[in-house]
Length: 128
Image (cartoon, rainbow, N blue to C red; front, top):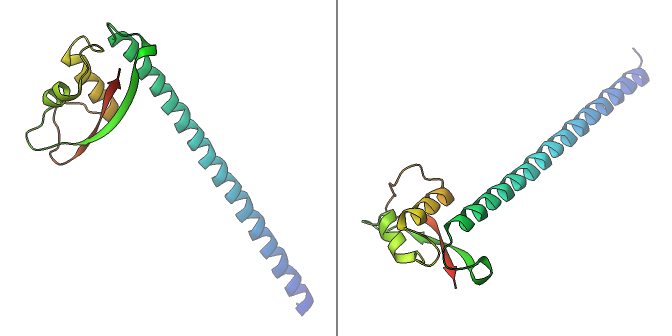
């Protein structure tokens, strides 16, 4: 095989590898964008669900009078969802402490009432 022919074959192989790499890179970018957009849509759907649950738990206050806020708090040894609820719950927004505890569990993805001491959880509070 001549030297020119060998170089031409090498160039074609390099071009083919570059094309494959480009195609794989584009596919990876598309997958990342799809995942990113999908997670944003899920987050928006979850937020709308939480807003719906907020409307069902409000008693004396209309939504225009309430500013819903979130705060990350450190769980101290001996803290329970009940003690945290008593500390942060606005009784004008929730019918009972159980409703507030259910919302804390939903926000943090908790399946049980157990908390890890020295961990953090997100709580919701309202500025009226």
